[in-house]
Length: 362
Image (cartoon, rainbow, N blue to C red):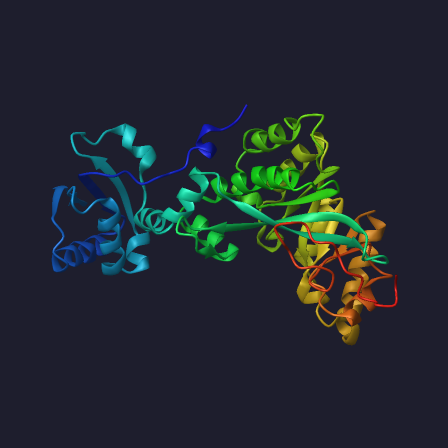
C-alpha cells in the first residue's frame, strides 16, 4: 500500500495553452489586471474575476511564469489561484486537482532542477560517523546527509534544495526520495553500523501510506547483501512541530516496523523538553547551539545538565552534535553517550574513519 501522488513528480506541462488566474481579492484582481496590461501579456477576462493568459508554443508556460515572477510581487503571486489548460482542452473539474497558488507554479518552474533530480533518482549522500563519546575512534552509527547536483553538474546546497521543495510543494517528494536513497547509498557503500536517516514530519501526511515505500525498501534488501545493522529515523526541524499527535503516529509506525527514532536539535526551550517527555524517542540529539563553547559557559552547562538528567530518567540515549573543539568534547565525553562533529570526521561520500582527538591515545 503506497500513495501514487507521493511517487509522481510534478513537472510543468509544455506547449501552448491558457493559464487561468483567479485572484482571491478584488483589490488583487484589479492590480493584477493592470500589471498584465502594463507588461503586455496577451490576456482576456472570460468570466468575472477570472483572467486568462494565452501561452503560445514559442513562449511556453515556463517562460510565461518567469515573466510573471518579474512583473508581480510575491504577495500578488500568493493571492492568486492558477491552473494551466493545454491547447485543445476546455477547463473542467478534472483541472481542479492541478490548481495551485500562482506562487507555487512559479516556484515549481524555478525548482525544475530539483524536479529533474527527483525524476532521475539522482540524489546522493555523504555520511558522517556518530562515535562513542568516551572512545571517539569507534563508530556507533552513521548519519546520511543529502547532497545534490543540478543536471549541469553544479552543487545545490541542502538548505536551497529544501527551500525550493517547500516553496514548490514538493517536500513530500523530496523527503520520500531522500529516505529511500539514503538506504540505497548506505548499502552500496558498505555501511554495517546503525544508520540515522533524516525525515521531516510535515512531509508525511498519513504514516500508513507515506512511509510504506521506506519500509518496503528496507525489507527488500536481499538477505545475502550486507546492510546497515539497524535504522534510526531522525526527526528534523523539531522546533517547528505543531502537531504532536501526528508525529506520535509517525513514530508509532516506525517502531511497529522495528525501527528506532531520534529527535534532532533538542534545545533549551520548554517546547523541546515537553516534546521529549511526550514522544520519548530512543535517541535525542543536542542542538549544536547548546554544544558550541559548552566547556566555558556555565549557563549552558546547567541547561544541558538538566536535559541530560531528564533524558537519563526517560532512558533516552544522548548524542551531542556539532562538536568542533577538543575542549567541547572533553566536557561532554563523560556526560553523553555519543558524539558527532567535524572534530572526529567531516561528512564524505565514502564513509570516513573517525579520528581520536587525543593524539596520545593509540
